[in-house]
Amino acid sequence: MTNPINIFDVSGRAMAAQLTRLNTTASNMANARSVARTENEAFRALKPVFRTHVESSDFATVDVERIVQSDTQPKKRHDPNNPMADPDGFVWEAGVDEATEMIEMIEAARQYQNNVQVLQTAKSLILETIRMGK
Figure (tube, rainbow, N blue to C red):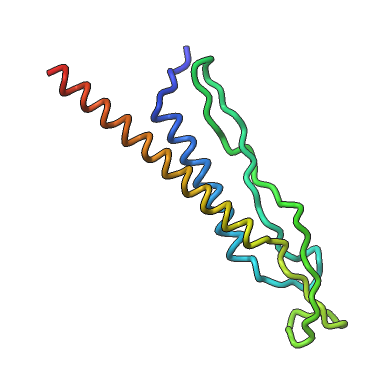
């Protein structure tokens, strides 16, 4: 028999998933203005892929299945004074859309905070139930 899943498991898994999302977004933002010598060397944004985790018919939560590179293409820019420039004076900027990453960061932070609130509410209800039983 498997252990029953509870609200703390559900929120904990959701918080772990959102933390992974925040970490990948932070990595994307840190590399947003980086440049490379070739298109293949240029940084591409990272995105977590989530998978529904079902332990019983009553509860489902989330797991991070893997982290993939986004299909946002690097941009070729003429910058002949850059030490990374190719012989024609071009560099490749990271394939990161900073506006999209900021939205992603705000959304992940809010969802993380929502799960913190769920845990605080569950804790309060449990403590109140214990007080009522005394």
